[in-house]
Image (cartoon, rainbow, N blue to C red; front, top):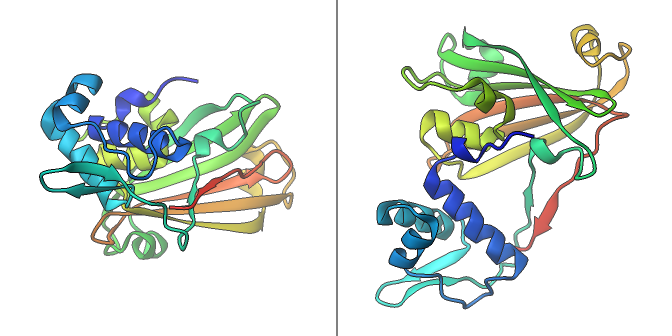
Length: 240
């Protein structure tokens, strides 16, 4: 599968890398995070980029910054359960995911899209439709909707392979503060069945995702319809 790292803002990549070290136990509660200059040298980015990444980690509760002392890994909170989900890993590590971009364009928001993204009907919205394929064939149809931003180019590979939060960050220059997921039982309708090479009425799963900015403004909505016989929803929980 093609790498999507070049599509993600540098500060977001830095924050995600440090987050993985915290979640894996490489960095433990109470450990001090390397200084701005050390991180800038290690990740070959500017100190401003480091500040943005560290600020994101602090906002998400992974670290605490103390003036004059540095930034420290926080003690895990046991009253909150965080599930991290990526459509790029929905098949598990044993299978290869391929993505085909079916359609992309700017549309006028209808009532449903307006409600999901908290915008007025008729607002210009960027819509992308993708087909996700595994070794045995089509597994899911994924539709993505986000505010149209004039003058922000998106590459075809980016629209195909970038995880939705990364795509939203690239398009809006905003990093998701939280993602809300809704998983429900469904059946395949005619168009979905044709794309997924299945029978109409086959059991399916519907995975919806709404991405919110720090001000609680929705900045992205996606709806994925998955073949029930080829789909495994896998998430990892961390007590943060």
